[in-house]
Length: 255
Ligand SMILES: C[S@@+](CC[C@H](N)C(=O)[O-])C[C@H]1O[C@@H](n2cnc3c(N)ncnc32)[C@H](O)[C@@H]1O
Image (cartoon, rainbow, N blue to C red; front, side):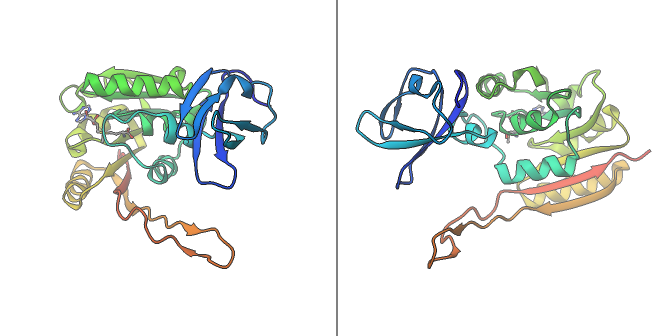
């Protein structure tokens, strides 16, 4: 059952509308009328709430990705979930991992990293724009992940990552190749760096700088996800979808 403070994914019965609300959050306006989110407290998972205009919505426990998709505010361009989960795999993250990340942006990727390093790990996340940091701080609080992230306002090209020592560095910023010298300083031999790059020109710069700087085990991947229409008799790929997001470059520090 839902407890006060839990996030619930509300799915319209027989319709396409979905939203995420917090149990015990009072009156919430949605595109299907008002929801009294206090009704969710004590409701079994799968129970029904009815909006002010009579729409029936099935209440399911929300995942971290539901919360990110429906509740996070967008400041800077954010990493898509498909890329975020593959960044986690390329980085080899798990509970207890220590990560340095730049830039924080809206904190979408930060939230996913924090979710995977919990409950013992930490994400040191750096950005050089205070407005982006504010959006990210709010988003991380929304997801209840603030305890696993240390946000720092810092230009990592100019000033590096400070005194942190980490297992992994994740870079999603305009010129990640210029941060690779400082990345080397905070990793031990074999430590991992993962770069998210959106243009072929930037991809080329990062790969050649990784090689010249002595990183090894360099790999480049692109994550293509195609959704299918889950309708019996009409099973086929969806007509529209996301075509390009970016490349995930991963490597290990040499010795
Ligand atoms: C594309 S956004 C990151 C989006 C983020 N990964 C997300 O999923 O929400 C790039 C961020 O890098 C930051 N940035 C660019 N250059 C930087 C630098 N030298 N040091 C720290 N942050 C930097 C920008 O301010 C911006 O917020």
